Image (cartoon, rainbow, N blue to C red; front, top):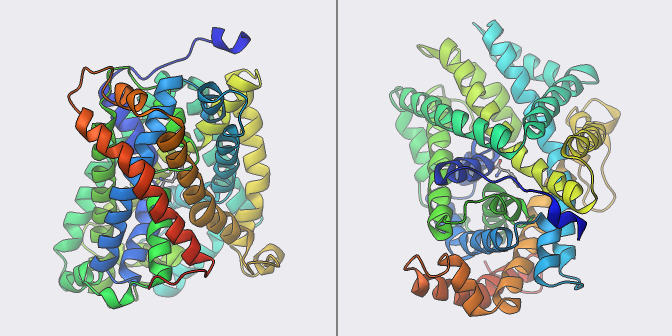
Length: 460
Ligand code: PHE
């Protein structure tokens, strides 16, 4: 077949594999979704549920995606086609491509706000601001039509350019350079935060253990967050693993990525909450926390004027490296399955994401027509519909099918053979246990969560 002749790129080393995969996992989710959810759903108790989701669902699904990708060396759709030719299984890949778009639509909008804040904080726009002016600045950022659309366009351009450069010269080079920078900036911000007076209260908010807040909603949120955070259920990891080196220890990579990603999320929480609490501010939800409260409190602390741009630079790195992996899903699909050149695939996808993404960008402005629009079913804005459908429904559903696919359609010996790198790693027992989990634990847990969501059973 024609497509097999296409020579595929690969990451050049184990380190490149690690940083690219971590770059996908670490994103706005760590800074924007994770700390807030932990704080509002019972702190340490939510963290415990989240870690269980990662261990019994997230990591098994991640390793399954690695298996599918590296074994076939194909994009998310072509990979299923290669393993089970002519079967409906490739629809999982297509659903993943669809989910990638939904996420890109709203993610690029938030990415745009973050980029605009990098620019504003570097210019010193936030020096000496008050609560009112901070809210006003955020208003200027999200009120359209021009500023949010302009910055969304810039983000999509940056991501597109890196993707056009390719897997090694683009994705690998950028993630290998920027992920360490992100870590360093984050550690500096967290260290400053915990040395503030009153920091203990912020840490308590993040780490208090209150199991009474673990209800159905919290469990669903923890599961959705695990999928979103680790970029699972939509073929991102299938696509990246199709570029992995042949000798990569995939169980090891998944453990390293899951642990590092959780550390980044916790550090982000440690950078945010002590600072917020030491000024007696509300830990508030989503965008307000990141774009109003953070600039406000950082502008008041010693070294804050340097730390504030640092904080937004690290957020922009996180957003960019995560978007690379999201967009790579349709790019790999279109270039391998539909015969487009990589550049053409990037340009067409960039335009589609930009045009439809405007719906999400403008729906964040409550004063605008789009901001007042609610869909008839969920009563949410475009922004929230894209977010809700993708993280809480499509990703876990994709994960369920991926686990079932590997657990039931792939022979145990084949799975173990690939995961142990043709027997060169001595992890056969672990791989065999993992296969068991993929068959009997992961799908069962996911089905329970789904049944619970649609109200057929009641968990908590
Ligand atoms: N993991 C990314 C984050 O936390 C988001 C993401 C989801 C990236 C799905 C790729 C695929 O922000």
